[in-house]
Image 1 (cartoon, rainbow, N blue to C red):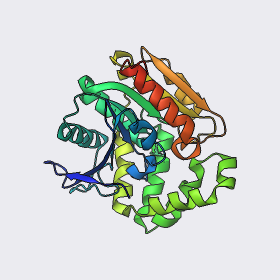
Image 2: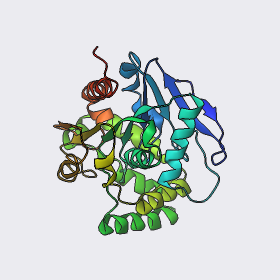
Image 3: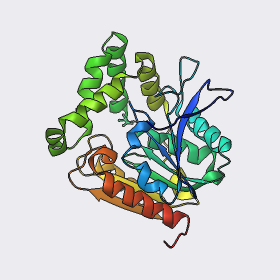
Length: 272
Ligand code: MLT
């Protein structure tokens, strides 16, 4: 079991994170409904060359918050707190889905701390009205005690068809991971995502490269939608994985590790 470091901040009673390796920093942000352990098949390969920081976002894993609501911006602040604690001035930040929304908020709040931004099955835009409505229905279900049916229905939908059929054990583990989150926190995350603004305009002003990781069978961050945004930054790295849904860190860990490593090397101008 990896070691968890824990700090307190004025806003968060506990921010837990993992730290591996040495060298320039990469921060890996998980999505919903997950925790930092999601990146377990990725962090060792990156730690050969980089310092890898993997937080549990507030309200996930061992990290907590003490109000009823959370915002995506507060989650970005928690990432900044961890970087301050570790005396990391700049990092490549890779965010998966909701972690990518958090990375976009970080890019707006602390652009000077960003060496590179990797959006792993994620988008810079806001929810569409249709998506907000679907989330509100899920919130209603969770509030009525339906956390379990919600998680059991949503998790399989994150994976590509063949992967899902061939790896029922992985789907089961992800459902268990999702069920560890408290219903109130699931609701708070959904509200945070509903309320996040469109940050597409930030991409063109970013002073760092942006990476786009796309799953051809992703139902959440569809290739069509991500590709539309993937030309907006000044330098864009685009990878499209066949036979992959929304979860390349589980479906295509070797390709994702390599792409994150190559992108980070480019961002830090490393030759080897
Ligand atoms: C995630 O993986 O973080 C969520 O699916 C994001 C979302 O629902 O937009």
